[in-house]
Image (cartoon, rainbow, N blue to C red; front, side, top):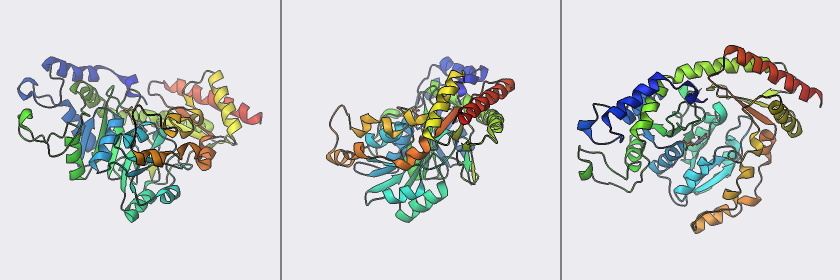
Length: 400
Ligand SMILES: *Cc1c(COP(=O)(O)O)cnc(C)c1O
């Protein structure tokens, strides 16, 4: 993370194709576009890389989640199980459809805890949406078993873990639908953009139509297309998709760099008494965009976070206090601060949220630090960084 560090000639050439034809839109204008269909090309590359039958690109990762849920039939009043540690997009997508986000505990994977998910299921639950945070993944097999048993959809948010895998399957391809973000700070980026993958032809067709006002995309006269159902506009532009076409070709190169840097940092922390690594499911392979570890207590994690910053080590996050990623700071959600009114069922279901606490999520998040892995570091810089982190942590732990 993030792919913008590596922008160069490849990205420029793809964007130039679009500028040369002047067709910035992904649909229509067939005669003018010099054969360039960047969004389509990105979809083909995404499906091929992720081993799925279909891919649909959209305007953002948040749009991908919204379109995925809508395309799989989630609607007003349905409950969707999401983790307490995620990005605000998880509940935004659910709420946008009039559905109800149900916050649920994470465990030492930093992702949804399967037994907490089982307990959160009600007669109105429609989907479970694990979020593969900070480069690693939820334990998908037990989650899928629960979904199968209760006839629920499994929608993977793989926005932060593109290129990782589980049981040999690319993250995002294990559940019914998988979602990616190509926003500016993700492992591969379009500036703004997102995508979803699926093997389900109906969900794919729904996503294709829904993300473009319900257009059925039959024939070559856009104005004459019909609308089998209501949709919305979540289209990606050709300019953004062009950047993505270049970046997805570089995904595996980026992953190798991240893994390399991760290895060096992890090596320097190995054997540090008091530091434990985040749990990676046995069959999981990370995308290595973050190094995540636990300290023995919340107080020590806070000290370590401060000490790392003071030592000039940037990019180490203490998510427990973070406004975007952890439920403790989501007053706008828990107090349901909306511009307009919401449906009585959303109101009712979310009214208890501000009194809810999640001690087992707090147990893990309160002790966790997450250090970003950059692509642009030299080998020497990474080694020095690892050395510095080790020394800072040793000092913090020694002073305990
Ligand atoms: C970035 C991100 C999103 C949303 O992506 P945008 O493209 O910024 O809308 C969703 N979920 C997670 C976990 C993310 O990190």
